[in-house]
Length: 359
Image (cartoon, rainbow, N blue to C red; front, top):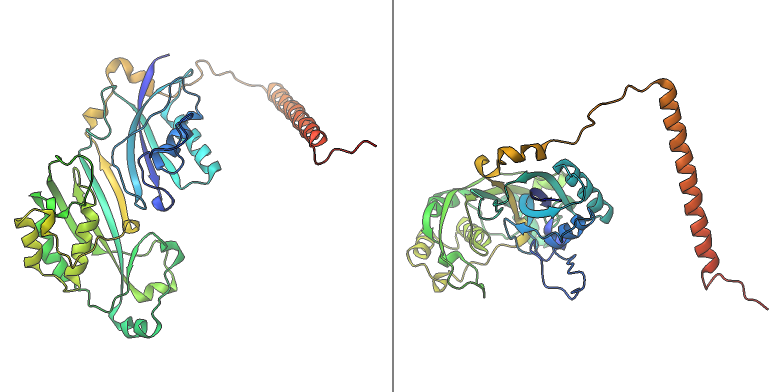
């Protein structure tokens, strides 16, 4: 059998996972990691019974608690049968649903053998969701010290209940500082790996626009929802969350335009403003990822791999033939049920707690 390279697209709610990337585990025998999105997807792909071990190459490594509407990865699969990408999506999603995990494949396709999901990505779009307490309820919050958060937004949005004003116009004034090719070293979180990594990045766009709750409730009257969209090819570790933390403090008039400009003019970890804290992960979503169509196009001789398998000569079934097929299916189910019942009875008889004590 030949090995095909698949590009898969998937979504997930990251609340329960340690991150998207596989972590080191103690299960060295099977090399499974059910605590990460990658680990669960690889385990689900094993249910296809490939001749090789599925290994995902993730395009975007999101942190613990971060969500995704659309992420991607590539993998090589050697299967003992013809597997159309739609069949792969269907079978993997069936398994994930049975496990009740918040991960879904949303698409798949066969790509050239030299395609790389991470290196070939042309842009990535992220969304950060904020919910800010409305000014007219700030005194009420001071009295109660608590406001209800809609259950549909639990760990899905960052709720801000401080009594400080939130001026979105001030945020819009500083956004142009982030657009273009800049040294974002000040905005990078501390990472113990790859210390020689370049901190030069190009941001295509960043904007803040009115948002809304995922599902309207009576509690929405307390909040103004804001969506922060960021578009770039790649990002540094915690760069977006640290940027959102800065924008929040700007809106609250805790830091100024000049403070943000200073961090760009003096790119260094030491230039980070200590009045700012990194925004929590649960408000962040990987929104979309894009590729060039020419990188996804298969060579002409492989185009047939993308076609679903169809019967070469469909047979015209008569009514008698249909009745016979249905009759046979019923008989097969009866035999299968009888076998399962007999197996269950045998297990019960042999169960040590249910055996009769011989006197």
